[in-house]
Image (cartoon, rainbow, N blue to C red):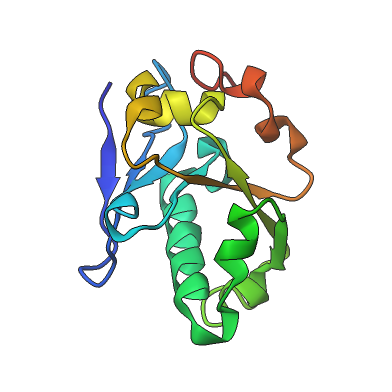
Amino acid sequence: MSKKSLLKSATYPHIIHACPLSDPSFPYPTHTHGFYNIGWPEFIFDPLAFGPEGNAMRINSAYRYFTNPINTGQLDGVLIGKILKLNGPQLDSKYMQEDPFTYCFRRVYADFEAVKVAYGEGVVFMVPAMEFIQIWTDGDDFALTDIYFKGGIIW
């Protein structure tokens, strides 16, 4: 499986692996690596939502949102089971002023199919356990199911 890494800036503690949509052999979710190393959950996103670059931009916006002192505790809320919904300008007032979508954040576990596709079955055995946050666009409820990600996303 070839993975395209998108490192947006040296200031981020993560890299983003994004599925090249031109290679439909095994589509996998856009996902981060590196948050685990700083005690954060890794983020995953449906590869078909906004494509590799669009998903990466939104993941980076989420990182900036959650590290903003004004939003202290929001990530902890998601990790204890709350669903956080933010419109585009709330998520990133600088780059997403005209964005009409609502972005949702929820905790998912290593047995969620999207996590297994993105990180491999061995992620279950990580110590300490890895945590995961799924980002999806409100209304794309199909992306919340295991069946959607089973064997890679089919379009």
